[in-house]
Length: 472
Ligand SMILES: Cc1ncc(COP(=O)(O)O)c(C=O)c1O
Image (tube, rainbow, N blue to C red; front, side):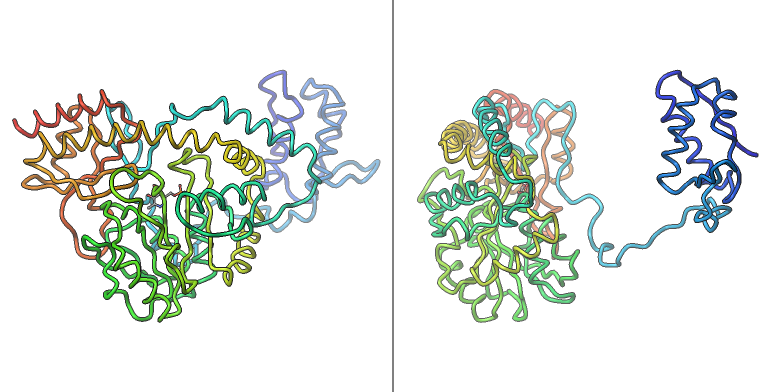
């Protein structure tokens, strides 16, 4: 019998023995039907207690790997006969071909280790969050959970959170809705995925801004959409260039990703009309529109939607932090039932603890306080950075106009994107180009400066170094 069992350490004996015997059976070294040594013999052979070998045999028997035949002994299960003796070479399982069009690493910059200042997008300053208040909210949620019935919950999300979101978007974004118009999701990304699931049949056309947000394109492609990049100009997506057969149109009207300009009112009105004519839905991804700096507040596209075609998508990744994985969708009422079904089929309803905590955090006013504080801090960082771009750096770049969000994009003049990124890196400065966000024809070279997590002092020091480098 090819049964080499070794006991390496004197603790965890049962687990060691179980793993080795199971592996011997699964790999076919112990053939189906073969008799195992008695628990007494094996115990004395390995110098372990009989209790240990008995427990291991019982476990293997419960799982069907071993069959006990009373006084005749224990045998390797017959059901395993077909797997015994199989080839040890593993084969490549081929996933559905649609996934070939989804990039391995989505074109989002990776965290830069060891940089003195990293201006990558999509990052917030976690240090400014009041974690004492967040802890209180989580403790409240745990107390509440203790009294909840032991069953599944509403796929739309916890009512407190939906209520808090409905009040918040009503006040901040002029989106008029009730609590049950809100579908809580695991970040904006899950909202995009759910919308794609319920709207896209393989081959359907989805229009996306170009340049645009790669994870949105990928979510649509993964479900078989024919994704058509539509160019943007200073007013946002060029509505006349949207294909006639588009079923879904994805836009970032408050703060075009990645260029930054808001969509003009004229375009917003034209977009809603164009969608209504086609029977298409418009996804309004309002990922960081709550941070507004100069000028008139940019209202949501949803607030202009008289036709019932706009799905408003929000995220807590910028207003709280991205790993919270909290977001929401406010669809037209006609789409809510199918979105609820899709959410339920995916993960039923997500984590109630986080939802209850966030709802409490919002309803208690802690979220509002945090946003006001973050807005003040981010405004100073933004002004500082803009001062550099519009001042000492103006010979090499020009900031694209924007009035919201936590990144600024600057278009380059006379210098190359990759070269500038590489030269900045020699000074420990993480800069990030916008070329990866283009899908159709390549656009002008530029840099996306995510400034939310970089202190004013670090902005000054790194931009000063960049000016010296570019001027050398
Ligand atoms: C355009 C855009 N949409 C959405 C998000 C946020 O997505 P999520 O809520 O899934 O973190 C981001 C984050 O960087 C973004 O840039």
